[in-house]
Length: 220
Image (cartoon, rainbow, N blue to C red; front, side, top):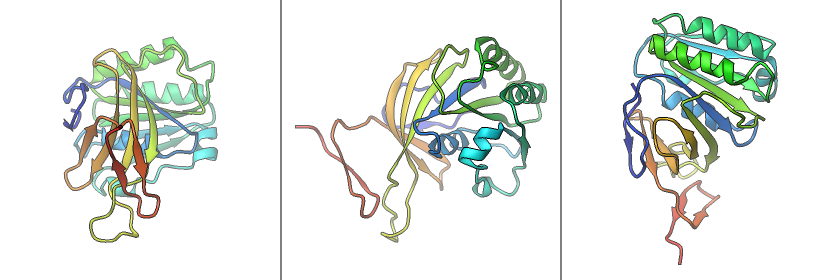
């Protein structure tokens, strides 16, 4: 089950598990990984995480220490995108998994509409959340039910230490969805509540780079 969303927006809070895509706005931006982690089901079931060689080389392995010691992550390192897709599809046969996440670099021929359709159908049949994290990629035709563009924003100011990072913030663009109305949001992740808060983006945003706070003001 997806976590509830707070604030403005049309994205449903509860939907069946299926295939979604997250496009990082820059190839090494970690925002897509952070957003995907925030959207995983609340369960201690294992996560299958599969990376191709270029994703691993250019963006590194995901830092997963904060997701909880009681949630095992099965990391699979593969060379080719076609092998990543095969491993993801095979993992979706296992209903005991909480989620299957794949990272694919660029636009490999193997990642076509048929491949994404197979992943979507497998995920829906097993009721397992499935995500494709795309870097240095183009949003070509896909059967993914939701497709996001994601970028990092300066974090919220820390309540106790102006020099420490606060809650993560992301710029989100749901540019295609078969289940909800597309839209754009500024999202903040509340660690304590394990909740993503959505707010409509301001037309005029001033960023205080000194302490990481973001001040939004109405456009004149």
